[in-house]
Length: 147
Image 1 (cartoon, rainbow, N blue to C red):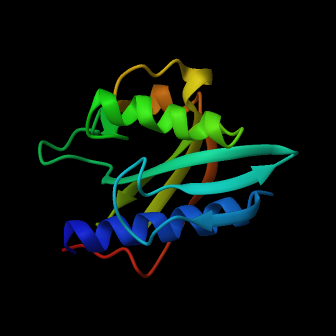
Image 2 (image 1 turned 180 degrees about the vertical axis):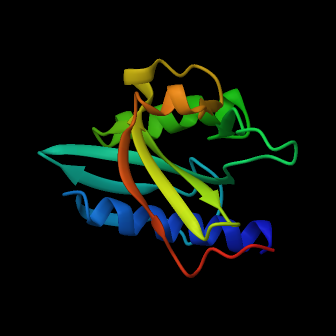
């Protein structure tokens, strides 16, 4: 699976996971790309959300959990994401997709930037960090293949 294919699949899995967790008015700005140019807008319980998506292999080459997933490329991108969210009256957030290709599984986690205090471009994703996020999905999926 190429990086572009993984990015597209991550956005698709995020859209599906948001739909099954009471989010409405869900729309992706584009089918692939990086946050903030590629983003999802959605609403839940009257709150508008401006969401970045990152998908990454859960376990790295060394056999350890990947400690964090990059949400944006630069600090300027993070600032721009916050600006865009504010411009539409939305809460900036993320959906992190942890892929486990060897098991054909994924987990999707939702969080807001403010709630976890992210000021860097990386979302902490060790098991203890994930406890602070909302688990949207944890399931097998035939689109996730071991390569």
